[in-house]
Length: 496
Image 1 (cartoon, rainbow, N blue to C red):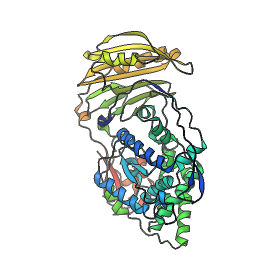
Image 2: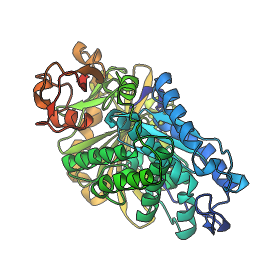
Image 3: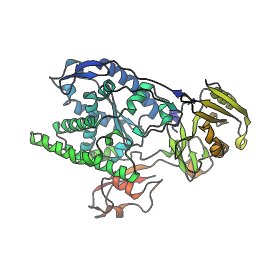
Image 4: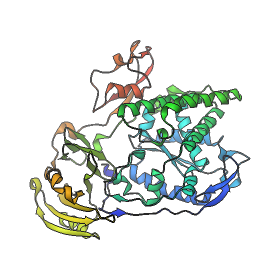
């Protein structure tokens, strides 16, 4: 829960349809005419509008030097991309691109129509050199150049997007229902848009092409997909990034070096890797969730910056987003959504604002004083468009100059099963006084040289911070735990 971007979330149901009219235009990549869901001018407008929402939702990583570095590399790729070629139609020539580093631990990169490319600090932490970054950036430029989002818009009806608070916890791009409520329907649809297998292959090929044309060893991009495969295998599910969606990372780690070799055979020497420069640029980068913005440990959620804590029911998973903290059971049909209410000045006003929403039927309401705090609570019901009946428990309390609100809900016939869990969350909200937690710092990756020639596992400290394990650090360094690392080699070690 990022204090800079806390917003009020109202319990609502959104039904939206993103309509587009088909436009026949020339592809900047193939030079052939094809159908697009938007005109190029519309794509430029969409990207500009959505960019501001992305910034507000995720925040930019606070490192101007790193951001400038990423932007500079992106601009180099643009010079050889289809946006700078004489054969490209004039409307695409010299399109302005914006490259941003987002403050997210998710290993992710994505692009919006019109020239907006994003990489996360999580992705930057997992790359090992500049050549790998260039392939990733080139891949994203490729999506924009091939106008893949606009192609998909022409080929499919996006249909209705129904979101009920945090009940829809989509894994694509690390988004969940809590975060998507803060985005316009158009931006949300674009982010949840799944590129097809051919789209990804085309962007992979373009990423390799652009990188190879300016002398980077594009085959290095395959090593990054090896890392994605390892992350996926360790987590037991697919990576929350379109980079690994179609086709799978295992195929791409093999295909990218083959593509690079084809460009070498065409006469493009690929010798630039720039590992040391890249590692020094990312030395000290934040790794994982920032505990200053809230974290869960042993069944308790702590927020050091706002000095509070509350219990997490057994079996519930925590989704900590910039705008809200969402607790969801394994089936994701019992949800607790916690946020700051910036629109109402008292707990009573906060609760009644929810009760006033269309379709709400109040069952009961009354004042409350959890742990001596001024509060208000209510129970209500809501019938969804599909006929599903929900029971909602609403609690709000005043603490530290803010009004905090809990929205807990499930299907009406399951409410009795979860009511105790719902009650314990706001009921256990209290001041945080543990100095070890109040002063906790984020984990950062420290660049150092191996002190001896040894298996990578022997070079790790005896204890690692937060919930990081040895395999995580091996993946970050793109080595195996039992792999021998030569003395003097650069390695990244987490410190807190």
